[in-house]
Image (cartoon, rainbow, N blue to C red; front, side, top):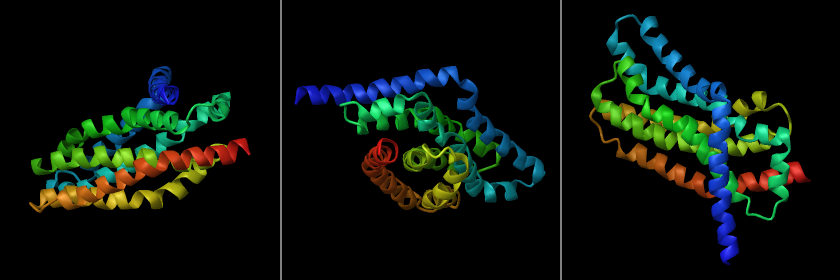
Length: 230
Protein backbone atom coordinates (compact mmCIF):
# COMPACT_ATOMS: atom_id res chain seq x y z
CA UNK A 1 0.00 0.00 0.00
CA UNK A 2 2.76 2.46 0.89
CA UNK A 3 4.69 1.75 -2.33
CA UNK A 4 1.62 2.51 -4.42
CA UNK A 5 1.15 5.78 -2.58
CA UNK A 6 4.75 6.77 -3.19
CA UNK A 7 4.38 6.08 -6.90
CA UNK A 8 1.33 8.28 -7.07
CA UNK A 9 3.12 11.19 -5.41
CA UNK A 10 6.21 10.81 -7.57
CA UNK A 11 4.15 10.48 -10.72
CA UNK A 12 2.37 13.79 -10.24
CA UNK A 13 5.20 15.95 -8.91
CA UNK A 14 7.90 14.59 -11.21
CA UNK A 15 5.88 15.22 -14.35
CA UNK A 16 4.62 18.56 -13.09
CA UNK A 17 8.18 19.78 -12.51
CA UNK A 18 9.37 18.16 -15.73
CA UNK A 19 6.86 20.13 -17.82
CA UNK A 20 7.85 23.38 -16.14
CA UNK A 21 11.55 22.72 -16.81
CA UNK A 22 10.90 21.80 -20.44
CA UNK A 23 8.84 24.95 -20.90
CA UNK A 24 11.91 27.05 -20.06
CA UNK A 25 13.73 25.54 -23.04
CA UNK A 26 10.83 26.42 -25.36
CA UNK A 27 9.98 29.83 -23.98
CA UNK A 28 8.78 31.10 -27.35
CA UNK A 29 6.11 28.44 -27.72
CA UNK A 30 5.11 28.88 -24.08
CA UNK A 31 4.59 32.63 -24.26
CA UNK A 32 3.03 32.69 -27.74
CA UNK A 33 -0.59 32.16 -26.55
CA UNK A 34 -0.28 34.95 -23.96
CA UNK A 35 1.21 37.37 -26.48
CA UNK A 36 -1.47 36.43 -28.99
CA UNK A 37 -4.20 37.22 -26.48
CA UNK A 38 -2.65 40.59 -25.62
CA UNK A 39 -2.21 41.53 -29.28
CA UNK A 40 -5.78 40.57 -30.12
CA UNK A 41 -7.12 42.54 -27.18
CA UNK A 42 -5.11 45.63 -28.07
CA UNK A 43 -6.64 45.71 -31.57
CA UNK A 44 -10.20 46.20 -30.34
CA UNK A 45 -9.75 49.80 -29.14
CA UNK A 46 -8.15 50.64 -32.47
CA UNK A 47 -11.06 49.15 -34.40
CA UNK A 48 -13.77 50.79 -32.29
CA UNK A 49 -11.98 54.12 -31.89
CA UNK A 50 -12.91 55.86 -28.62
CA UNK A 51 -16.37 54.35 -28.24
CA UNK A 52 -15.97 52.97 -24.72
CA UNK A 53 -19.60 51.84 -24.57
CA UNK A 54 -19.12 49.56 -27.56
CA UNK A 55 -15.86 48.21 -26.17
CA UNK A 56 -17.32 47.37 -22.76
CA UNK A 57 -20.39 45.73 -24.31
CA UNK A 58 -18.35 43.25 -26.35
CA UNK A 59 -15.60 42.78 -23.75
CA UNK A 60 -17.02 39.68 -21.96
CA UNK A 61 -17.52 37.64 -25.11
CA UNK A 62 -14.35 38.87 -26.78
CA UNK A 63 -12.14 38.06 -23.80
CA UNK A 64 -13.45 34.52 -23.70
CA UNK A 65 -12.98 34.06 -27.43
CA UNK A 66 -9.35 35.11 -27.00
CA UNK A 67 -8.95 32.68 -24.09
CA UNK A 68 -10.33 29.88 -26.27
CA UNK A 69 -8.03 30.68 -29.19
CA UNK A 70 -5.00 30.97 -26.91
CA UNK A 71 -5.85 27.59 -25.40
CA UNK A 72 -6.14 26.00 -28.84
CA UNK A 73 -2.66 27.27 -29.70
CA UNK A 74 -1.04 25.43 -26.80
CA UNK A 75 -3.14 22.36 -26.06
CA UNK A 76 -1.53 20.14 -28.71
CA UNK A 77 1.86 20.38 -26.99
CA UNK A 78 0.67 18.44 -23.94
CA UNK A 79 1.54 15.07 -25.52
CA UNK A 80 3.15 15.82 -28.90
CA UNK A 81 6.77 16.16 -27.76
CA UNK A 82 6.53 13.12 -25.49
CA UNK A 83 5.09 11.08 -28.34
CA UNK A 84 7.81 12.19 -30.77
CA UNK A 85 10.72 11.29 -28.48
CA UNK A 86 9.20 8.01 -27.27
CA UNK A 87 8.84 9.00 -23.62
CA UNK A 88 5.06 8.72 -23.84
CA UNK A 89 5.28 5.02 -24.73
CA UNK A 90 7.69 4.46 -21.86
CA UNK A 91 5.20 6.11 -19.53
CA UNK A 92 2.38 3.91 -20.81
CA UNK A 93 4.28 0.64 -20.29
CA UNK A 94 5.71 1.62 -16.90
CA UNK A 95 4.18 0.04 -13.76
CA UNK A 96 3.27 3.39 -12.18
CA UNK A 97 -0.28 4.69 -12.15
CA UNK A 98 -0.93 6.64 -15.34
CA UNK A 99 -3.54 9.08 -14.06
CA UNK A 100 -1.12 10.92 -11.76
CA UNK A 101 1.51 11.79 -14.42
CA UNK A 102 -1.24 12.89 -16.79
CA UNK A 103 -2.76 15.13 -14.15
CA UNK A 104 0.70 16.56 -13.50
CA UNK A 105 1.17 17.39 -17.18
CA UNK A 106 -2.26 19.02 -17.40
CA UNK A 107 -1.66 21.00 -14.21
CA UNK A 108 1.64 22.27 -15.59
CA UNK A 109 -0.08 23.27 -18.82
CA UNK A 110 -2.60 25.31 -16.84
CA UNK A 111 0.14 26.98 -14.79
CA UNK A 112 1.95 27.97 -17.99
CA UNK A 113 -1.09 29.19 -19.92
CA UNK A 114 -4.29 29.52 -17.91
CA UNK A 115 -2.77 31.11 -14.81
CA UNK A 116 -0.96 33.90 -16.72
CA UNK A 117 -4.15 34.61 -18.68
CA UNK A 118 -6.11 34.81 -15.44
CA UNK A 119 -3.65 37.12 -13.70
CA UNK A 120 -3.41 39.42 -16.71
CA UNK A 121 -7.18 39.61 -17.23
CA UNK A 122 -7.60 42.90 -15.28
CA UNK A 123 -5.21 44.52 -17.72
CA UNK A 124 -7.29 43.27 -20.64
CA UNK A 125 -10.44 44.50 -18.92
CA UNK A 126 -8.88 47.95 -18.55
CA UNK A 127 -7.89 48.04 -22.22
CA UNK A 128 -11.45 47.12 -23.22
CA UNK A 129 -12.96 49.79 -20.91
CA UNK A 130 -14.76 47.19 -18.82
CA UNK A 131 -16.25 48.63 -15.60
CA UNK A 132 -14.32 47.85 -12.43
CA UNK A 133 -17.15 45.64 -11.20
CA UNK A 134 -16.23 43.08 -13.83
CA UNK A 135 -12.54 42.70 -12.96
CA UNK A 136 -12.85 40.13 -10.16
CA UNK A 137 -15.56 38.03 -11.86
CA UNK A 138 -13.47 38.00 -15.03
CA UNK A 139 -10.39 36.76 -13.18
CA UNK A 140 -12.31 34.08 -11.28
CA UNK A 141 -14.12 32.87 -14.39
CA UNK A 142 -10.90 32.60 -16.38
CA UNK A 143 -9.17 30.74 -13.53
CA UNK A 144 -11.95 28.15 -13.48
CA UNK A 145 -12.56 28.14 -17.21
CA UNK A 146 -8.93 27.85 -18.30
CA UNK A 147 -8.45 24.84 -16.00
CA UNK A 148 -11.48 23.23 -17.63
CA UNK A 149 -10.08 24.02 -21.08
CA UNK A 150 -6.78 22.34 -20.21
CA UNK A 151 -8.48 19.21 -18.87
CA UNK A 152 -10.94 18.78 -21.73
CA UNK A 153 -8.27 19.74 -24.23
CA UNK A 154 -6.02 16.97 -22.94
CA UNK A 155 -8.70 14.41 -23.82
CA UNK A 156 -8.91 15.60 -27.42
CA UNK A 157 -5.11 15.93 -27.63
CA UNK A 158 -4.77 12.28 -26.57
CA UNK A 159 -7.14 11.29 -29.37
CA UNK A 160 -5.11 13.03 -32.07
CA UNK A 161 -1.53 12.70 -30.81
CA UNK A 162 -0.83 9.51 -32.79
CA UNK A 163 -2.47 10.79 -35.98
CA UNK A 164 -0.05 13.63 -36.71
CA UNK A 165 -2.94 15.90 -37.72
CA UNK A 166 -3.84 17.41 -34.39
CA UNK A 167 -3.58 20.96 -35.69
CA UNK A 168 -6.56 20.31 -37.98
CA UNK A 169 -8.65 17.98 -35.83
CA UNK A 170 -8.26 19.63 -32.44
CA UNK A 171 -10.34 22.76 -33.16
CA UNK A 172 -13.12 20.66 -34.68
CA UNK A 173 -13.37 18.42 -31.63
CA UNK A 174 -12.66 21.01 -28.95
CA UNK A 175 -14.80 24.02 -29.84
CA UNK A 176 -18.15 22.25 -29.19
CA UNK A 177 -16.84 21.04 -25.81
CA UNK A 178 -15.58 24.53 -24.95
CA UNK A 179 -18.87 26.27 -25.74
CA UNK A 180 -20.57 25.78 -22.32
CA UNK A 181 -17.61 27.34 -20.52
CA UNK A 182 -17.53 30.28 -22.94
CA UNK A 183 -21.25 30.89 -22.48
CA UNK A 184 -21.16 30.81 -18.68
CA UNK A 185 -17.84 32.65 -18.50
CA UNK A 186 -19.18 35.52 -20.58
CA UNK A 187 -22.40 35.49 -18.55
CA UNK A 188 -20.44 35.79 -15.30
CA UNK A 189 -18.74 38.96 -16.48
CA UNK A 190 -21.87 40.38 -18.07
CA UNK A 191 -23.95 39.78 -14.93
CA UNK A 192 -21.35 41.52 -12.75
CA UNK A 193 -21.13 44.55 -15.05
CA UNK A 194 -24.92 44.90 -15.02
CA UNK A 195 -25.13 44.61 -11.20
CA UNK A 196 -26.74 41.17 -11.32
CA UNK A 197 -25.97 38.10 -9.22
CA UNK A 198 -23.05 36.45 -11.01
CA UNK A 199 -22.64 33.57 -8.55
CA UNK A 200 -24.89 31.19 -10.49
CA UNK A 201 -22.94 31.09 -13.80
CA UNK A 202 -19.71 30.90 -11.81
CA UNK A 203 -21.11 27.97 -9.80
CA UNK A 204 -22.03 26.20 -13.04
CA UNK A 205 -18.47 26.70 -14.25
CA UNK A 206 -17.16 25.25 -10.99
CA UNK A 207 -19.41 22.22 -11.38
CA UNK A 208 -18.15 21.62 -14.91
CA UNK A 209 -14.57 21.91 -13.68
CA UNK A 210 -15.17 19.35 -10.91
CA UNK A 211 -16.62 16.92 -13.46
CA UNK A 212 -13.62 17.47 -15.73
CA UNK A 213 -11.17 16.86 -12.87
CA UNK A 214 -12.90 13.58 -12.04
CA UNK A 215 -13.31 12.28 -15.59
CA UNK A 216 -10.66 13.71 -17.92
CA UNK A 217 -7.41 12.22 -16.50
CA UNK A 218 -9.00 8.76 -16.42
CA UNK A 219 -10.29 9.21 -19.97
CA UNK A 220 -6.89 10.36 -21.20
CA UNK A 221 -5.17 7.34 -19.65
CA UNK A 222 -7.63 4.95 -21.30
CA UNK A 223 -7.39 6.69 -24.68
CA UNK A 224 -3.60 6.75 -24.72
CA UNK A 225 -3.36 3.07 -23.84
CA UNK A 226 -5.85 2.08 -26.54
CA UNK A 227 -4.51 4.31 -29.34
CA UNK A 228 -0.76 4.01 -28.80
CA UNK A 229 -0.15 0.60 -27.25
CA UNK A 230 -2.74 -1.37 -29.25
